[in-house]
Image 1 (cartoon, rainbow, N blue to C red):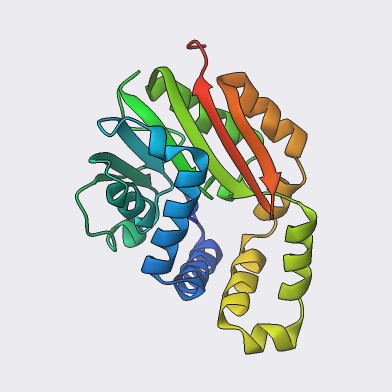
Image 2: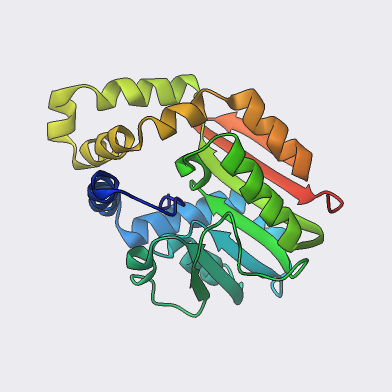
Length: 231
């Protein structure tokens, strides 16, 4: 899970973002998140990636996805996030940039793999922002470069989770559910817009990437694709 990619925030937005970051830190420890990302990457196929691949993680937050990649043996790593506060929590060998994912500070066709763990659903303008981000990823990936994405998706399981998050006594009993409920509430209405546009979102993915894997289960979209010819 990662931070928002918006450039400007009024005072209310800044306060909401601060509350979201606090809930995010309560939701799971860095070690828990790193192990989760390792499991995800292995399921997506990271075991078969070349260990010399140049990998960029977008919306990398506090860098636990980068730690996961490092533990899997990848050493040419970079991370990008809008939040300097979250990036400051990362202590590792990857090179990190405080930047807007809609304007990547990277050269054309210069990276092999791009990874996103739950950042796209924070984009404030859909589908416009998604198109810009995926266009940028397509631009910086080499020919046949790969994008892998894990994002929330409105499956029956996610609907159940939303219901559980709305039950006050469960929120009080479970620190994890309470933190998740807070994050979901603070992400409205951006989060809702993401969940309400599945066909439009997948169409944009397919415009810029040739689909190799697209699976929706347990409240997640798992997408892997290779960059199409530069548009």
